[in-house]
Image (cartoon, rainbow, N blue to C red):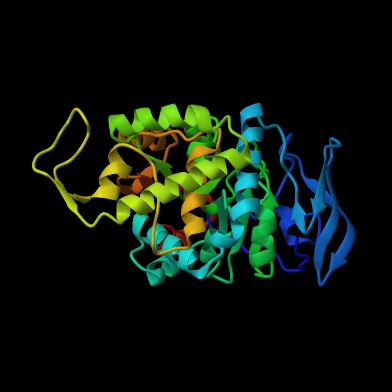
Length: 390
């Protein structure tokens, strides 16, 4: 937690919270159990950061600050606790592979393309219009770093797992990134209306209820704010049946057993990729959900029959980690485009971008900005309109 004397910078659509303490982060977060304000009691500081101490609300709910990170995990279901533990296992085992330059660059490029920014410059232009940003499910922190290019913004990087420790170690020195250990089931941001941009990429399908988790995050949007998320898509029927059959077993394995199985899947994917032949499907096969076209062997098997992820562009251990990410968590729900569109309608968000690929669905939606009109003059509103609607 950084201790700064400046007033928290907030995009015009978000109301600045009343910060009772100097540490900037404490002006934004609230008790995840009762939504009341938190007061910090540092026990150790270094270079303006609170390294350890506690946060307490007016109702006596107390939370630790350790390693520079507020630990605000509270009120999770039993399965959510297990999911948090499974991802803690993943990050403690594989975090180094997620911090390689190759993986970070590949994921950044993939994210930018899926959400329609087209280039890093396009993303940066968008981020210059956002003052308060939530990265919900930051994992290794690469996405938080990507979102922090606007030095006048504040990026809140939240994850339920111990990944925040590895992320903080890598990116904790960034002046506008704040790491928080907290759950999407009970986000520590009070009544909402705080964030100009919320990203939850490859996360919500691992929660107990994807739709409800998305709705919780959407409630945190400020007027004019944007919510972008990616969730798994329902795949070909045999692949779906295979996933359910295998995951019913792998989710009951020990961490070591599932890691060994995930390695076997990566090895299988590598072996299939070594077959330098194309499989031509002359016409669609609707019963199997297979589209006509030309496939290499590994991709045909991967998308239609069995998840065995492998890529020669990243270290082998990263391929193992990607399979582990699918097979070990308690939940890995898949959804249809129709479902996702209906969620955004029910959340009162206007869809501004919708991208569907084999693996999943990337969608962005905006909260109407009309509620800010009472706060600003007509001239100010006109001058800011382009920025809000960018």
